[in-house]
Image 1 (cartoon, helix red, strand yellow):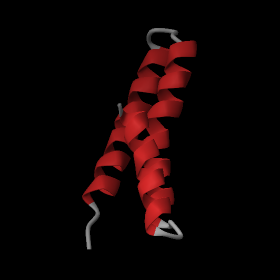
Image 2 (tube, helix red, strand yellow; image 1 turned 180 degrees about the vertical axis):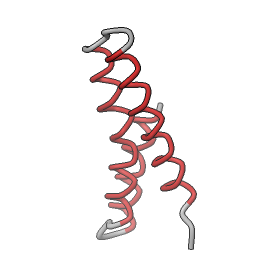
Image 3 (cartoon, rainbow, N blue to C red; image 1 turned 30 degrees about the vertical axis):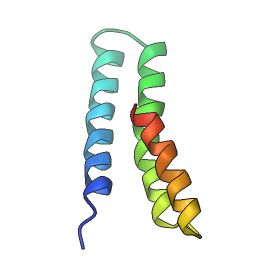
Image 4 (cartoon, helix red, strand yellow; image 1 turned 120 degrees about the vertical axis):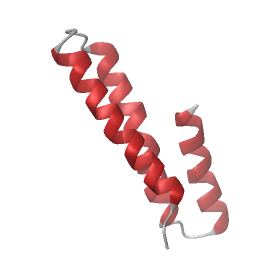
Length: 71
């Protein structure tokens, strides 16, 4: 069964990595691009952690963290 949130967060992470590369190489922007990379890829990491949650409340907590990062 497909997980749309997992798929979208993965696709978003790929776009963030590409943007990071562009900012780093073409624009020589290092500090902002590193922060963008960390926050943009952490969404998918939190979604993946939520999939392995030990309880329903743990799942909600981890998904809430992913939502905060996306905001």
